[in-house]
Length: 473
Image: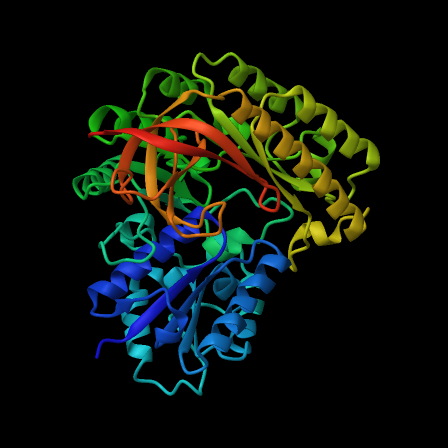
């Protein structure tokens, strides 16, 4: 009987793309994917380590899965495994650790692990010890190039449980920025990019498989192309996808405000297939805090970005990441942040109270903010976000919701899994009662917005809609 496995991914969209590729690779090798923990012979925890809290949550996932099925093996992979494999080996239940640099051959390494003794935890591949990692700059270590395995081609078999209508396509790996709060350059290595032609080939393959929307992702996609040509090529690859493929919908992953150039804005304004939606890795608005974070922009450039967006002829949905309580953030800094946000046009905030990450320069900065204050400040901004998001939905009351891409079955506001959900091009979430007309994933429909519901715990607002018609490709 074929071995059954379950992939649990935590963290960013790039990690989800990795998990998707790994799952497809194992399926191609004869294993069977499952979403039922009790059925699994193997758990693969694809971890995040961007903060100490993210690291704890990744390791907690192991304990939670083990409680449901203590007989299954556990392979721990992702950034946490790459950054500190020795610590990961000591987590009860872990039978093997697999770093990011070996993701290209992960399927074969995991299959080989089934012939090993699960009671003797091992490191699979070439991941380095933590002390060696800290003593060497990431650029000096051996990392596979983008075209040589660092970014496997996407494989999306129908039986994959993480298959999504919105396929995440990784076009870039690694980061050269070294923000003071971030350990990820050590977990992902230096910036490495696919060529524009390779990206086009992968998009065309996804389109041929019936994918209707692609989200470009990576560790830092704003650096796309720099490692190969010495220049930023994100505009070039976006224009190539929009003009040389038949992809119906394109989204782009997180970008710094200075990376959303006039050229990218022009492409969004002139191509209907480029979804009007930006996710901005903003983190803060005040120059002093941005400098402490070692971000590559100041308050003046933040203001310039919002001015450019406000002039757009095609208004995008604007989501942003923010950190509260960073070392040195005073009451005055936080008040200025709040005043700036009140003046800017945006739709949703993803707010994170600062969480230390061992080994990062930010842990050595003076002016530590009490944890309770960090959380209080986060709650203030989260409340602001929910109010702004609700206002955005209120502005679309009783309108026709065009181009809702149905992704799959979800639990609705009545607590029953008799609903499907999807998003409009400008990222309005829509819930529709499950019916033959609505279908499941990969169907685009036009729907009537009847009313909205607010999930305060998640900071989420959703339309309750009814389907008018399908939109054929």
